[in-house]
Amino acid sequence: MYETGVREREMFALTWNDIDFKSGIIRISKSITSKTKIKGYAVTTPKNVNSIRNIDISDMLLKRI
Image 1 (cartoon, helix red, strand yellow):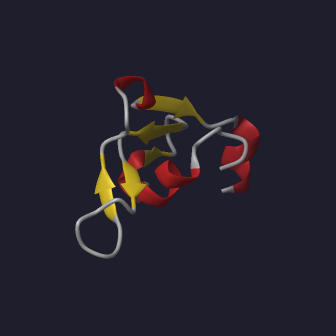
Image 2: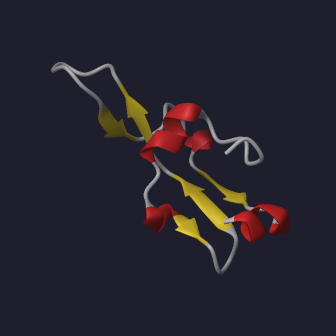
């Protein structure tokens, strides 16, 4: 995830459906938070609209996967 610039909480919220290996894109549309009324974590939308984005996966990184 280092090469992509994805934030830690965004990375932990990713599912396989968020990664398009054919197109080489990671879709960031959610984040994980510990700020819940009950103990534990919850998957939420990012703090602001600009955090929802698509990130290109470099060819070098795709070869490693």
